[in-house]
Image (tube, rainbow, N blue to C red; front, side, top):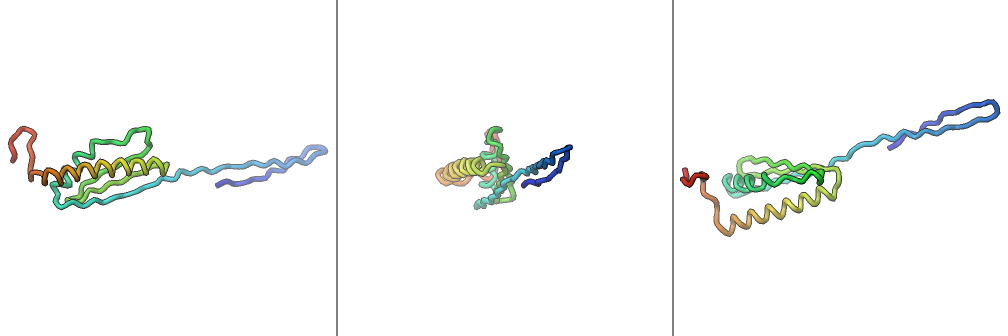
Length: 120
């Protein structure tokens, strides 16, 4: 959006009109949200733990925010360029599909898990 301003300028024999254009810039932020329900809170937690470590690269200029709400994984993407947001969404969808297919193949995760070998 721009504003056009006209400034008349007078000299002895000459009348000159000076045009000045003032540009107002604004930034459009594209924001998309997804909610992915899972059969159990434990499955949602496993998917959240797997996907949260995969941050968006800084050059993508897209921010991804993952939130876990009981058995629902909530994801939001924000960015200035639609193409980069689309690429981030596609990449996330591919990773989400891989994790959910792995859970389907090997069965639901244990109710609790300890990294030290003893399930609680």
